[in-house]
Length: 443
Image (cartoon, rainbow, N blue to C red; front, side, top):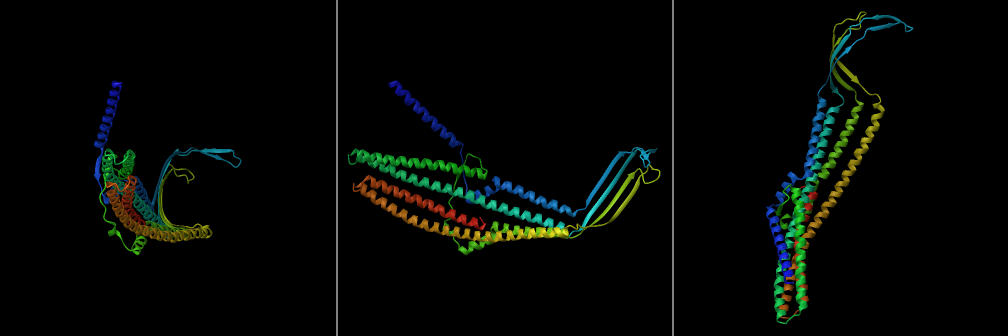
């Protein structure tokens, strides 16, 4: 029996040593890196995959402008061919053979043709401008992604700060709980309290340990999400830095609304969409205008077949002139197309009005929540002070046997809850501020 107990103890010690060793290995592999708000946003701008895709799309849009500008250049075409020419079979009216005429059997020709669009109602210029507007729209889409990614990584960063603060609060309360546990054990040994109170104190310690375990795991999850978004090595542990007090961030509501009107990529994007719709109507109207172009060409052909007797020689000719073409059907087709373009313009104009109203509501709501978070933080600060004062009073009474352990635990829980609420409220102020700035498009 003694050997069996010894083996179990030995196995338990080996497992404990293995766990400790594994923890040390994991810790050794972790690289801590202290980052502030500006640093994480810069890393996100450089490494986030969503922004990398957006930049590639913008490069494609810019290249489309280059392609559209090629329409200014003349079109040049060169043709060359060689062929075998058979003898000519001459037939009369009833398909009877009359004779076979010998022909030069080898033939070839070369042709060079160049055309230059002179006038089409500014079609080429308008097409280039339409592609440039598409680039502007792509830049605004990228800016919207930038604002979203910045807010995402800042939110994760604030979550890390919140969890770090919560861990500090729980650690402080756990230290108090341990001291209280020591006093209770002393009281128990002196017969001043029952074993039930010892069990209650131990349960409170276990509850705090469980909360700390959950916080540590949540910190690991948020940290991992953040390092992936920033393009950092996965084993990096981000250490947060203090953020400026929120009192320095307050501005008048009208300031934020004006900021949104001037900078919001959503409003700028809707205006660019309106410009694109107008440009589309201008392009449609060019269908009603004749196309004027210059052309020139040169050809060399062998054999010469427009003679009574074919000649095995090269025929060289060149030409230059002006061409005018007009699709008459556009007289009655273009009107319908223009009407469709005007409907499109009216739709995007109404959409802009709706977006402006939605933006105004969004800024109004964000500003109210920002101010509310400041007020809540002040209230929670007062509650924390009251809870701490209450805890000290109950603690003094308990030490003098004037209060029960349940009262002590209740006061401790109230103090813990008030400290957590204040910690969360302080981070919430920063979150609401950055959310407000995001709505203005200036994050």
